[in-house]
Image (cartoon, rainbow, N blue to C red; front, side):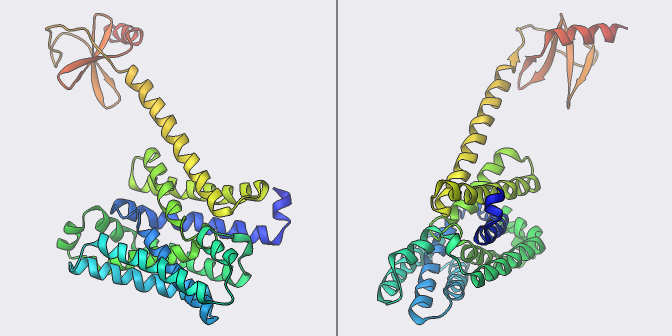
Amino acid sequence: MAEILALDFMRAALLAALLVGIAAPVVGVFLVQRRLSLIGDGMGHVALAGVAVGVLTGAAPVLTALVAAVVAAVAIELIRSRGRTSGDIALAVMFYGGIAAGVVLIARSPASSPASLTAYLFGAITTAAPADLWVFAALALVVLAVTTLLRPWLFAVANDEEYARASGLPVTALNIALAVLTAVTVVVSMRIVGLLLISALMILPNATAQLLGRTFRASVRWAVVIGVLASVGGVVTSYFAETPSGGTIVLVAIVAFLAVAVTKSALDHAAARRHRRAEQHDHEHGEGCGHPAVMHGDHVDYLHGGHRHAPHEGHYDEHDGAQATSQAEEARR
């Protein structure tokens, strides 16, 4: 690690990865809630058209990509909210139109090359200019600040848009704000993860976090932790493995998701095996039934014949008998 920190370009790369690892999941959580997981891909393709305009005109590609993505985000949300066409169709038009325009315009630019196009599509963080990194840092901080400020209202809209509208919240304005935040996040991440892969960093940490967190707040925290570990870990791995940073970051995020999913499945299976039914009998346990009642977590177990019986969905679950015997003796005392 000391070897990496001794290199100026790797310190900048790790800082950029840290910012993206925090910002992308924070925005992505609301996209997952609204089932708009693929909107990041659409914004990425439109941003490619903006990059192409910058390359063709000699302007800063980061800024032209930002303008293109923001305009597309607002247009998609306005079309969807006014009901002129479905959100899916609007997204598809932007998706294909953006990448087609980007490819055509970049091909027309004498300054372009396949390597430069690949850097934007799949990420090449070590080739980003210092000025670009400052812009990325500023945009990431804006995303985090706005998301933190609007989080209660964004959550309300993402959870139940109709109820939020009936409650008087400015739903259209909040949806536009989320779309713009998504566009900005895409532009922030395009040199780190790549325009074609950024959606993965917005969605995968949240998919993993939903397996770990029991509340929305806890899920957001887990998503940020996983996003940072995936982005920073992916950059470090790509340095030693000599692989593209964007693809490596996404693969690390996928490995994290699979590891958590498999582990949780195994734990759930083990818990299910411990969830045993008691033997069938006609006696109904309840207050005054003659058997000691013992609190067990958030419910009551009844001690009967050396067993602990807990009423559950029309039957009785049988819990640990040895523990039940000990508790029965304590109850008699």
